[in-house]
Length: 328
Figure (cartoon, rainbow, N blue to C red):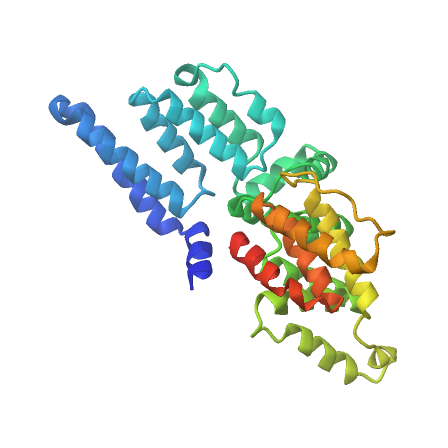
């Protein structure tokens, strides 16, 4: 399927990336040996470096190799775009993006990228060592609350980082921050599944069911929600009396995720007017969905449509499908 192919393309494939980077380095050497074909060889070098980065965006060498080649080719705009792309992967921090204004990229571009990767390593073990040694977990958490994770690569990088929080007994912080990731990219079914498992381990069965239900809405063949119900109903303890959350609980959960998604929304949606007449509410919600989708705010539209469907508003299903398509 198209969505699976896109996801696969964004996940690191290190061996293939290493080959492309090695080819890029060979073409750079050839450009120095053969001046007559220098331009052609550098073009091949850049093409291979771009492929290396496409196949593995988590290897810092791929970023630095591409910028190095662009410096040789005197491509100032290209270096600028590389830095913007890196900062997108690192969550579109506005302070970092503002540092690019007025910069001489041919002089300082490679140094800035190298410094950025040293300060915020892409490799998760290296990142965790840096954060833990500098007692910077709180600073990381504060950044996460304001960063933009809509880029799939950013979602992967920060998802791995948050998993390190969980592995190091920072479960409450993991559970808070992971919701920001999911609000920005609600189609990340693997992260929903992981969050559901944590809730289940803590015997927070309503929350676990809501996460598994979300997984099943994204992957209809996934049995996780039904497996939870089977596990709970087969127990002899009090959990055996558990029943799935009522509509009101599901709606509150989806509204909370919708509000988180709105924090990075490209448009400022109006707050719901609880005093509006019920006969007008459907039209208002429909217009709001249309407005969000037209503006490309798929995340907020996704949770709004799911909330409406949870309340029995079947007319919202085509809007959910549109939002899901945009996210994919």
